[in-house]
Length: 212
Image 1 (cartoon, rainbow, N blue to C red):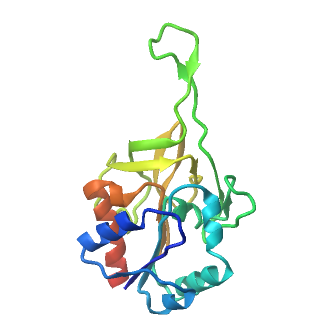
Image 2 (tube, rainbow, N blue to C red):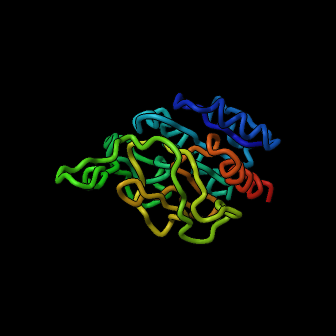
Image 3 (cartoon, rainbow, N blue to C red):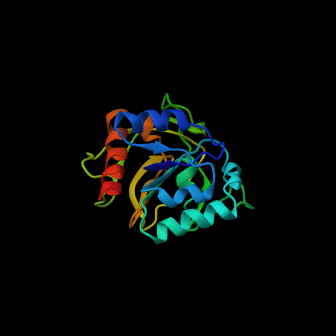
């Protein structure tokens, strides 16, 4: 049974539909104690990092306990950022701390005007919304079967750094971690539930890990 964590951060319906398409059994635990029977945990999320404050000490302890027992954990978008130590978007809200580093606001490099003739510069818009390509940085179970440059769907203003846990990166002004993995803990900055067949492949890889 996959535990889909509802902490008021949205996008549960679309994630649930994608998992149902893959014939996964999904529950939405109402209390941290309900995680005891979970074979896998997904923490979704959209919006501001401060929403993660709803995952208080009891939720954090329950999730960490399951991770210590090798229960696979997947974070999506804000859920992935929460796996890190924290985010500049909400300095007082700690992350789960399973991955080293802090998320920072996207900084986009300015370039020449689009007509190529003027000295003015223009910047890419933040938030980063839409399809972008995924660069596979190393072999992983999460991105198994994906091709270099596969397109996935993003919507975010903050991003995690490229560290040794990064298995896939994307460039939008700067290079940032689009997919991370450490042992049985993983996260994606993009939305696999909105990323067509590529996203379903990633969710399927997670379910295969859960099934053992």
